[in-house]
Length: 249
Image 1 (cartoon, rainbow, N blue to C red):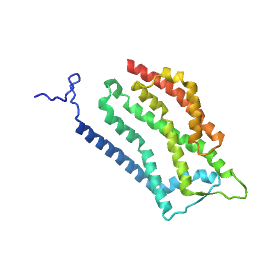
Image 2: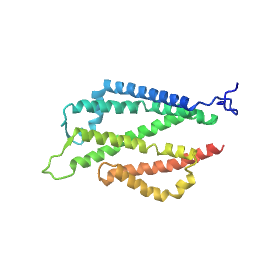
Image 3: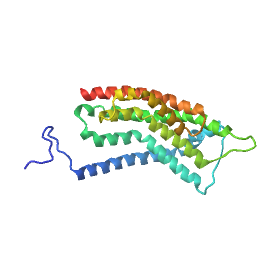
Image 4: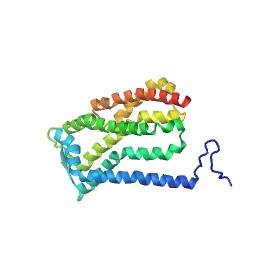
């Protein structure tokens, strides 16, 4: 008796809905295990991460931080370990997602999975590094120096880390614009012609987005974010063109 779930053209058995759910569950489990292992590794070096990396911008800009909650630092350390675990395990998370959708890819597209995983991870990490080394120093310097000389600025440690982490994660997500254009082009939603046609509108949107994502009203910080976004937009047009060409081959 023939299995009705076998694809006649490829000879590969198609998975049922429940089997897809089971595969999705294991995909999430493997991704979660990677995040936990990354968090454990971060916890081993948590003092170094907190003192030498995350508090470094505060020391450079002479910001005065204070903890106002009981066990506030404990919860903060746990939060940093989990976020750090996610960043460290990002290649594994992306790889697990791609392995889940791999059966839906064409044979010629499957060989690019490793490159896509690497490129996606590099885009995100580039955004995180860009925010840490360029955006945050200007933003924190502006925040610490702004105001009356008769008022001492004390910053809550929760608010400080919230700004640090949110800006780095948002920058990492924004730097995924080239990958987003790749996916949308593959789905037939986006074309390089469309992106070139609305380039002027996109420039306006990019400057608005830079103003919203920058934690201060400092125009220099906003410009620092806007310039690489413009570059990423042009890069996205090129990647969309390549993606469209691959799809037509």
